[in-house]
Length: 150
Image 1 (cartoon, helix red, strand yellow):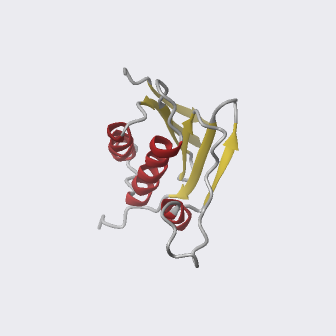
Image 2 (cartoon, one colour):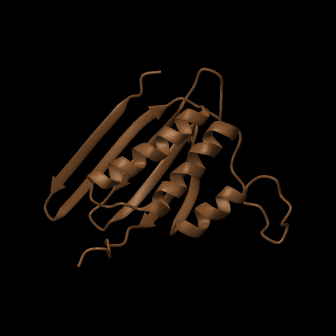
């Protein structure tokens, strides 16, 4: 599958928005690639974030595991705005399968723990239904300045 990659930067008065979109195969390799592309893109935007990479890894893995339809991939979109808020969106073709977070007290649940990680890293997350038959699981993270510089 040839990934469709779109990058845009919008410069307006006192605002700057970066956007990156790629279509990936709904395979384990596609999920790994989503994380690697996120790492590279955030580095290019000079906003590295291991938390964002972890969120992308979980959402991409869920798209592959629970959102797969034969012959259809998933789309990763990263949007970084002027306030350093990163919005991560993963769109898959299974709008009929909405994610649910497990009850943390349940302890022995065999799935859904990745969404607890997403909830821990993200300031907000949710699901947008449509356009049919798709859904988009999204998360927003406020990226902190790199404290490694002296």
